[in-house]
Image (cartoon, rainbow, N blue to C red; front, side, top):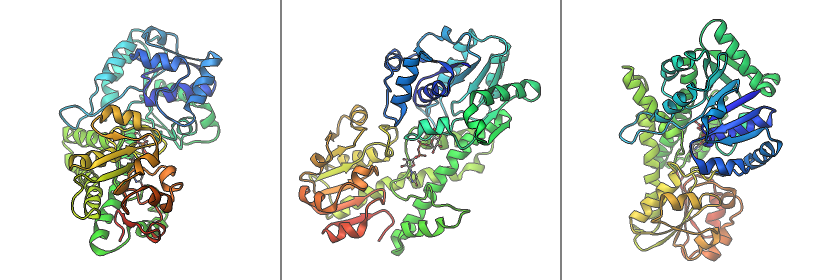
Length: 436
Ligand code: UGA
């Protein structure tokens, strides 16, 4: 099928390349000339495992092209819109400027029978408000939220655990759903759940899934706070409750909490939208989820202060990690970088390292000192803080090796990812999050 993808950021670039890799003819359209140029050469503008391969393949096959010219959308049967919906500068609500601009620009090139599939994460009610822009051209709007995780984005796009499409009622909606089934043919053929619903439900599936995940993380982090005053171990607690299949162990990783371009802004946008709908109290707990999450960053900083005897001023702190999670170079709302910034603000001599995210971190926080290599950051450190659980720190860094480089013996495990007893046996004063 001929497909256009409007917006070639994280979501759109991966979606375009993934659609080409399953056999479609795809044009990716973005207003950013530099991004389009890089993508046209098969270069991924960010680190995402597996993306470079399918981009290169798609571009070489001629089935995947990129342009800044919206007119290239004309002739595609399906148009995916995956532009960003960041948090507004002066509030919690989502900023829909890019979504509205993309729909306005696309409208001129739509042809009767086309399907426009919105993928951006939007406040509930957005699709209904946009539908007439699309139907005026004789095309149909579907809302098809995306559930990909950074670091697993290619796999999640080609082989998702479910597909959700919100469509208008009646024959028009059935036709749109059938066309989207054809788009996602490999996943549909293997029996992936394909849920056809209305716009509001589709939009809500997306935000409620992220709200649930954020709540799960903050739940275990709240338990970590209780563990800290009772001497309990939150990691054992998570293992134990996680055996109950109704609860499950995943996303019960206590630590410095969630960040990134999705969870934080999505729960805030959800709260803001619920307020607008007069149902603020229904998701009032999300404010608490946010507050718990932010408190955990401060807790990690406090552990460093305590570990260093009451002050970090003038002490060298190696911060291992800058990305909001491993397998990503994304530093948007990164708890890891936030811990580094707070320590820096307290007068510590912070050296931040990360296997992938140093360049992005330097751009957003030029006031910090960076080291490309892990061991360079560790050399002469009075304290070591692990804030992103990359294998380079979690598995491949032995406490003995770290001790041979660092000056002090204080380690703060902001992700509860180290073997505490091995570090203690090697002479380190180990401090976990919610662990004795
Ligand atoms: C999240 C969702 O998981 C995806 O399903 C969704 O599609 C995506 O947002 C989106 O809306 O686009 P992502 O932002 O890539 O995906 O990251 P996650 O894997 O969800 O991790 C989010 C944060 O939670 C990270 O900072 C991670 O370190 C933290 N986390 C995760 C914990 O602190 N503890 C855990 O147990 C798990």
